[in-house]
Length: 217
Length: 281
Image 1 (cartoon, each protein chain N blue to C red):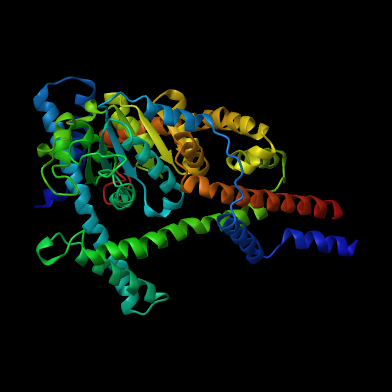
Image 2 (spheres, chains in turn purple, brown):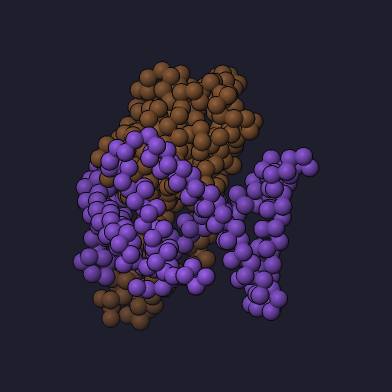
């Protein structure tokens, strides 16, 4: 059965799956081929959902040794695993015994623990940004000065008080946003798109093997 | 001179706790004592509202909740205002979520607005439907674009086959969709929707997003793929004023102003002290 370990097999599967998706996108090959293509997309959804289980196992492989060996911050790992199991258990789709996404405790924990914690984490960024802007946003060079000027105008534009005090900041801010910013973002998008195409072609012809056990060429 | 250097140094190294405290106060203060600063309305909010206003009767609108709970503070006012605006129109609405937290937020909004009660009087399964979460990110978008019925065979609320609902008789693929509304904070988001729904099916979309995402979406606005964009809290306030329903966006506008001004003041202090200290040296 050593042939099963041959690297050519996953490469061939990748190439076949990619061609099934790519060719019907450009060429009309009839309803049967389109249906087959749709089935492939559905399969990938199932495979993607299965990857969640792999993620959970991976998480346990990291955190169980941390708790058993009492490594630094092991208490957090324990808390993480306890809540992971509680949420997984409460969310099991067995409505006959009251479990599932509509279970009271599942909803309670989601709404009253996860939601405020997530919102707090995001909200804390405002404090870090203010502190970081004060320390790092300095006109150390011409380029940094230009960045400082553009950034300050956009801060003014984004605050109702800013556009109230300096009405011109709205127009100048819009210009910065719509002209230089858009030009740069378009360049990044085009560069990224070309990169994705090249990566796709390299994968298709078997040159890109990073996805195979993390190995190189 | 020695004392001057000391002053600049002090100004350049203000204790971070003082900065946090000042910011904390200026954010909280306007919520307790609203200032009511005027909010000028920008072109993005106008085009966003206009896109919804110009929807023909019986248009099929798909609303996708593509964000996590972390950005609730910035996105929730946009979501509530948009859903209110949509529910007041004689259109069909299908709600989906590409992000796992999406259904939770959608439930929060639906609990708040109650689409079946006045003033909306929308009938579930006829005027609107909640289809729930689709795992798979961009692949899920592609699958939905091809076939709603097989990708989401059951609705989220009653777990009944979608084929039994009258609204779903008009929604088989993305080709049936008049407008896509996406609330988003990252990937998968506008890039992926444009690739999977605009390019093959020419479905126009409007986007409500967090402020930091706006620079990456603006090329699609100029390109015509995104018909309107509401980036962040300020845009939410503008939009609430346009549709005449003041909510969290307008309530947060003062705090937005004061916090932004604190950032500007600290940046000015930092720069003055930096330049002064360099000159002294």
